[in-house]
Amino acid sequence: MQVQLFVPCFVDQLYPTVAFNMVKVLEKAGCIVTYNANQTCCGQPAFNAGFWGEAKDVCNKFIQDFSGSDYIVAPSASCVGFVKNYYQKLYESSAQQQTVKKLTERIYELSDFLVNVLKVEDLGAQFNGKVTYHDSCAALRECKLKEEPRKLLRQVKGLELIEMADNETCCGFGGSFAVKFEPISIAMGDQKITNAAATEAEYIISTDMSCLMHIDGCIKHKGSGLQVLHLADVLASFD
Image (cartoon, rainbow, N blue to C red; front, side, top):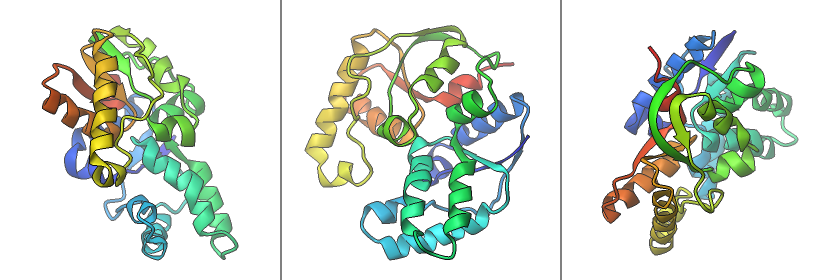
């Protein structure tokens, strides 16, 4: 199966290893992965800030960059959730409405694609350690993903998954929320770390590096020994 790779801005700029590991996982699952080097942002930051006109300019480029009929896979439920849930709102009653509808049906977050499209759960990964899982708001509420990442993690040899309290509660990032409401954002992040530490896990895993970036900043400020890992990093731990 041929898939197009969508690499979100913050992964491209700050966590490129996540993208490389996603390619490794998809190829292990039998996919032929293609990458359009001209791709840029999905438009979510501008949209969330209220600049819908500017966001639509970015979205127009995204639609062009990801034309065709191949599946589109990304290591971010946040970006995928935006495309799936808000592109149709932006292009409602426009000439591109049907094109956008088909695009939203082709784009998937990594765990969703592996479990629900490829029907793959065991990739032969091995990761020795205790981990806990953070449900990002976008994965849980916009992409309706709860069990998919857990199904994949449970098949990783040597990995012990321990659920933390309030695992569905927001970590406090929320994009511009973390900037506009910094004290609240930090308090939410600290609570997430407290709940994770109570499990005695060594790692916090999620589908979204945006959440993990925020959590990691709070971990370093708090002096906790926890580490963060994207789901793709764990699934790519095979020979």
